[in-house]
Length: 247
Image 1 (tube, rainbow, N blue to C red):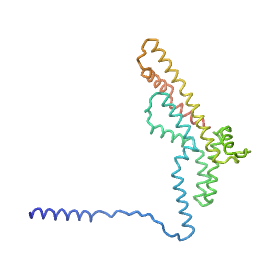
Image 2: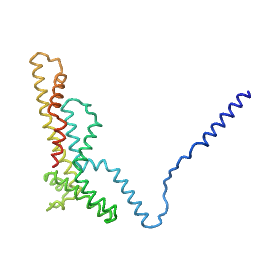
Image 3: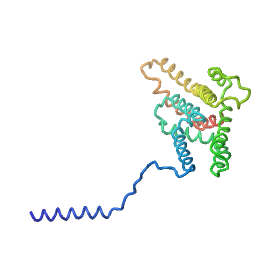
Image 4: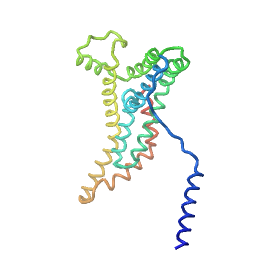
C-alpha cells in the first residue's frame, strides 16, 4: 500500500515538473479596438480589401488569364490519348498554372512596374494603382477576344455601341473573353483529337476484318496512340502551340 502511495506521489511530481519545464506557448488574439486616427481606419480597410482579393484570386486567375484555354487543351489531350488518370489532375493543373505564369509574365511585369511598385512607394493611391493594373490585363484580353463576343454582351446589356476599346466596360469584356477562350480551346482540342481518332478507326476496321470483334479496340489502339504521342514529342508541341497561340 505504501509502495502504491509513493509511486503515485512520484508520478504526480514528475507530471508537475514536466508541465513547469515546458515553454510557454504564444497566444493569438484578434479583436476590435478604437481607431486612434484616420490612418488606422485606412490601413484596416486596405487589409480587408487585400483579404477579399486573395479569396477571389482563384476566380480571377481563371477569368482574366490564359488558364482556361490551357487547362481545357490539356484535358482534351488526355482524353484523346484514352488514359483518363494519366497524367493525374494535380499534374495537369500544375502544368497549366506554370504555363499560365509563363504566358502572363509580360502582363504581370507591367502591372508590377506601373501599379504595384508605385503604390508600395506611396507615389499613387489605391484607386490609381488599380486603374493602372487594369490596363495591361484589359490589353491582354482584347488581344484574345472576338469582336462578335463583345458585341453579344453589348447587345444583351443594352449598351451603346463602343467606338474604342476604352468604351468597353470590364464587366462586358470578361465574359466575352471567357467564351472566346472556350471556343479557341475547343478548336485546338478538335485538332488534337483527329490523329488519335484515325488510329482508333484503323484499329477497329483491322480487328473487324480479322474477325476479332470481341476484342476491345482500345486495348490495341492505346499503345499505338501513346507511341505516336511520344515519337512526335507531343507535350513539347502542345506547350509550344499553346504559348504561341497567345502571341
